[in-house]
Image (cartoon, rainbow, N blue to C red; front, top):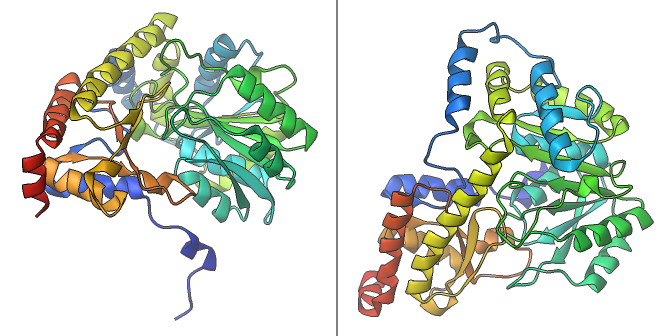
Length: 392
């Protein structure tokens, strides 16, 4: 029997999805894989009902249904101040997961180097390997997860073809400042590299932090490839609707990659999602307020456990330091949390290039009652006798 491709030995299956399976098997509250347990906006649900009865059950235009792209272009223009042509600047993908792969395969030749900030969303390293690129890692340093300029400059001096920036960041919740993005863009310009941004948490940012769209910076649009999705903003992670936004020259090539990867995103879901894209600005203000409340509720329980954690600036993840609990590593700790406490998170080592085993990542995109239930279970950690008994 022939051997599978060598590149597949360089990464494993998703640790995040693996923790979801563990949570399901032992009845734990799943705070590992980042999806809500509440419904999308009512306007979107009503539009979905209508779309299932409409003439939308066959292929849409490969790079996105026209009405969806038009609504998407208008929303992006409102947020960024850019003039977005739905026929020239967009390709609709099956979630931001495909969008990132399309961006990588469009930007990079086999053997090219790509800068990846560590910790990183686990797909990025796999995307680089699958597209034949070589990752160059630049450390984001806890607790604020800033980078060192000298390290970033040294990475660019290796002549990468692109840099990946997740903003706001999964897993850290870091929000890159306008100054940081400008510095990254300046270095990319000096070394003629693409800036590939991943921005599904664009509307989940906590004061005083502000989300800056890298593509909207002066002179940036020709160099920035923006990947995004509707999953987090409209609580529709299962719909798998994403997109790539870039210059016409890049999009013309990205459409070819997308066409032969997936052909197209689901036609009826694109039609239904238009209702979300047309929601007023008040929806996004309410979304931010909703997640700010969820963050404060969940962090209030973490404070009572006595465990250190890094407070997120955006997105809906928190990195909890479990190094004081005496586990041999974070993977064993995460499994114990799921099986014994009934709360599933993700071992932080799956996000780091460095040998880092201090953290478990939890998310708080859940109903208030779910977060309270998870918080009450986590409070058992404050009872040292209970913890020692349960670890025997």
